[in-house]
Length: 436
Ligand code: UD1
Image (cartoon, rainbow, N blue to C red; front, side, top):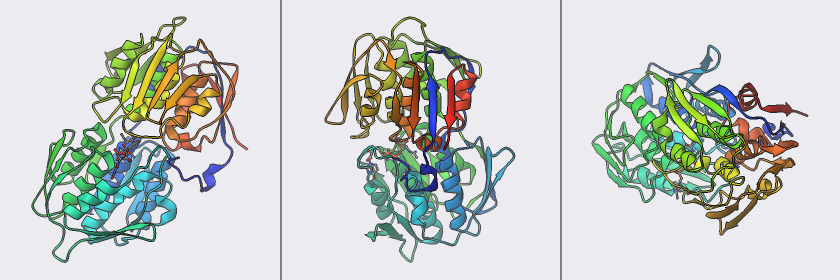
């Protein structure tokens, strides 16, 4: 689970779905969770001025990170209806991140680069996060070491110290195009004199969004969003006003919900270009996706079974691993056998035991590949969200299940989806919450 599950929010909350409704209408896609957490960490780099980030999703991960920034000495305030965050990091002084916040979400570890670059030292506990694989941080550390830092692991925390002369630019090759490592290295390098080149960098749009924010804050950075990023260190960064990009994973989740119900849904604010791999896959599954003004329209076929396909999750521009689970739910109702492979995480099929409770016939082979034999319909049951996207996948499945499905442990879902119940209800789903 991305949330360590140790906090107060691990209470017995449930989402109850009565399946069988065709979803129709327009749903507003919010700001990207993964971009927002990176942008908030990036705001720590500003030695002067406020950084105002708009289109922030109202989800628990953002609250956790905001609290972490405050504990490090930044001033953090939510404005308006909570979708804007104002951060002043001029008073950043604390280099140790508290374990109880970092263990709740992996992205807390993204503060390593900015804190090290600003203060010359950082002690960040090993991050928590969804239990979907080993999720090492070795590439983050390789990057910091290349920039000149001395990095050790002590008592469960990563300790990084810049040399007296400060960090300096370096040529860094990532063995894997890790999103988090690319972001962490980018942030640290903005203040490291000389040129840093990150090769085999992650190309996710979230990385591009972060790079664009850093440029607006005064960083000298190019190539973000491609496999090679160039950064020339500057003396200091300043605050800026910047919008978080739309959440392609939330959009893809609603696309899966539309597909599985044979619905007709406009994903308002979604960007076609960010979703290309997903929309191609939908077309293969017999679901139409079109670029419409202000969003993307998903048009399913009521009464017609989804077509089976081969789906391989891989780094961008491949099919996103975060949508592998919701799409496996859809393929579990296809008219034939699909093969789903996840090249990014080795344990992202653990939730299949829960999907099986709804009747799915899926066999995972050694963790990375699943054979999905489509069945005509799911049958509602009690299931447990084992991680964030697993929770979303179970809700998607429940929308097409006979009778009632209760999804337990939905605090995982709240970490990443703002008002998923209200948004699905707005499209006609019969869905509600039950809290103890
Ligand atoms: C980010 C996203 C997550 C998404 C993932 C891949 C955030 C907050 N999270 O996670 O939703 O699923 O990208 O698109 O943005 N790895 C290493 N060593 C490292 C770092 C990563 O071996 O130092 C491995 C991981 O174990 C994993 C793979 O690389 O198997 C990809 O991980 P990475 O891209 O780093 O994912 P995150 O940045 O953690």
